[in-house]
Picture 1 (cartoon, rainbow, N blue to C red):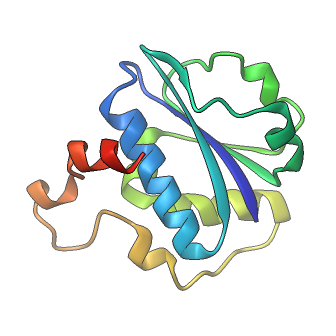
Picture 2 (tube, helix red, strand yellow):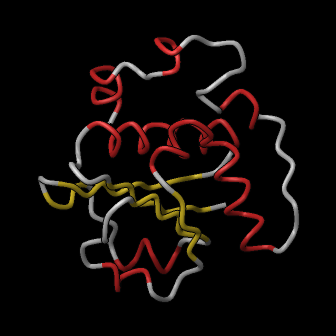
Picture 3 (tube, helix red, strand yellow):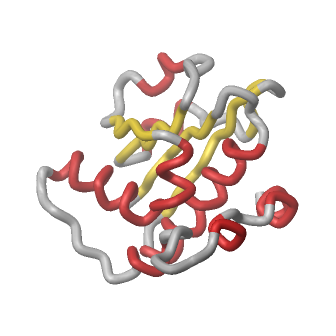
Length: 137
């Protein structure tokens, strides 16, 4: 599946990039291609082109604030969620987004290992290292 996504949070810093990294990691692990645009206080980064929108099967909008230039995504199936949910359950979000497109439940064995929040982890381990996340983008 060819997925495009947008992540943004009110400040446009940590959660925006953490959500982008989580989506990228999960999509690759699940065998999907993904292109992620980030938006925040610095504006639009890695802007998705009209050609990429036309070629994509699905748009995941992980936005906690209003999108900039959101009309670019009017003609593509959109699945809306929050950055917090993407950070914690990226694999599940992708499966739910695909299910919303196809109308069928999606079962992907890779989902369990793509979620960053695992049962029994302590608070300190639940958070992704912010600097490592920025380096991966």
